[in-house]
Length: 224
Ligand code: TYD
Image (cartoon, rainbow, N blue to C red; front, side, top):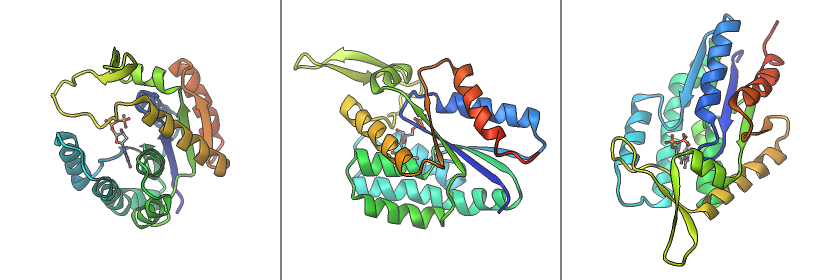
């Protein structure tokens, strides 16, 4: 496959959407290849349906069902969009991919990592990004950026509470800071085990600075 596959990973409020948008705009301006922006879950009719359905639930799903829904969405996305686009030499910019499942369902929610890996293997069919940017930021700062407000719980501890979203739908995000710490630690661990694919960036820097660091790495992968 001759295309280029780039993903952004990180916790809530780490700036993945902003960086994806900035990279897509830059690629479109500076290179003649087709650029496809994706956001998981989503990107296909089934993926969008799963996204809306999961958001609309007021009671938590079982961890196993949640895992299978995320990977079902991904399986459809890989077969119908990612594989054909890569075969057609496109550049894919993905706001989350299979690493999100490893970290959220595995490291943070606690499903056995071998099960999560097996599910991801089915969904990805072995297609992994050429380059993955981890937008690393301390959980408290990222939660504030994601629209959480800090409030005191009954024990007097500060905990993040999500602000109501426009549609009144449940947000995906977990509430507790320990959960987000597990997410961050999970990502840092993944980045360490595959240093050739991962680039860890300090996402507390201004968006333009982060983008310049992203662009430097991406440029190195673009054929002259
Ligand atoms: P979203 O509203 O898209 O937020 P973000 O901008 O952070 O991507 O919500 C996606 C949520 O779904 C986010 O909390 C991470 C979670 N998620 C998983 O738990 N597993 C997955 O495989 C994916 C793709 C996302």
